[in-house]
Length: 329
Image (cartoon, rainbow, N blue to C red; front, side, top):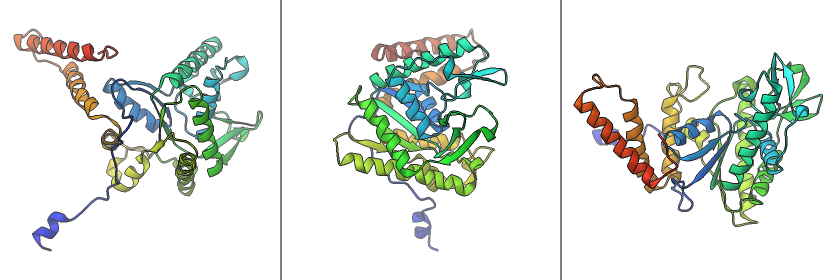
């Protein structure tokens, strides 16, 4: 093989990405992120760079129906009561919320559920962008109430029936979400993605079937929707980037299921390339400099050099806050 042949050899397949031309995310945007644990990875990046964002008010929601229930309850300003919670393993839980909200106190849980419902309602009204990451099409139905739950909270599995949502059911769920949200916030931008986290507890083949249902449903919904209204929804290929560009176990965490920090940073850079405005990227560089400066540990905190460093850091903070008052460090 000649040198020129080696120089042009491609060792990686690349997912083609185009930067969006309208409604890009900037520091004036208000972003609501809902869904699986991968949406929290993206949300943490937005948080680090000091965007205005809210991540999963009811905790991680793995499947489309859980997100739909949250949105419906928020739109209808639901008041949670004792009927919505149950006691198990010395803690109070809600089937519609992640276990991170569970609490030893019944009243505290009800108060927190209502607080997060109000927060979700506010964010649905105010958001410029809603990012939804779907993790699985597998759901569990609590037999006693015949209801699909967001989290089983380690209740014995015999009390549930496991079901795979059909493509039509998922597409219908997405349609319900957008219709309800646009009734109160008609200009909001939706960005969908499928989590690259593999749900292998369901089984290898079952995980692939699940992801295929999610991807097909999103695109089916988008294609149908584009024919009947002018509101566009977008798909960002997180799952495809992980499967095709990062097809190596060195990009996975020790459990060989979750993307590691290298993969998360890689996918974040791709998201930034498509969805973050060029002006915002300049501000991000300034925020990043400040964030790293705040983590700096000096050898001599009392030295003139370090005192000058702190003054420069405060000056940079002031400059950023002057332009974007919502940013705090």
